[in-house]
Image 1 (tube, rainbow, N blue to C red):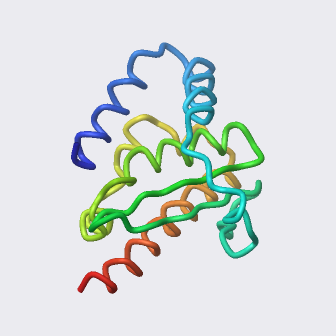
Image 2: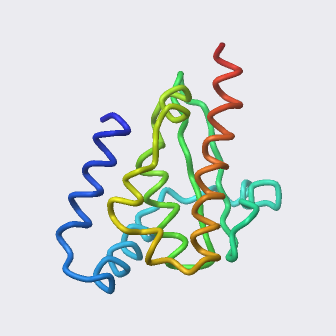
Length: 140
């Protein structure tokens, strides 16, 4: 499934809910299904800077695709990183770098986050794209 297809799937899922309380509950559920980072990668080096809560992200190259794992100490934040990982994991670095993140605006996520969480969301996207840059360089 392409990044765009995954984004469209998430937009459709969020459209099923009537209000933001239901969407938050759904994000918490998504966080529970997050592919968790292995304990040895839960280090300061893998903490995403700019997030209010602690968020760890790790990336590995499998073939020519990046596989992400992550965790957070906050349930909403864990849901946010779970959405991003669902979109970007198992994708080629060049596709991650070329992808826009307009789906976040489409589901209304940014406007329903506190300013610090919204900044954290931007930091998460930046970090995942930084991994893509690093792995794209290795593949070139």
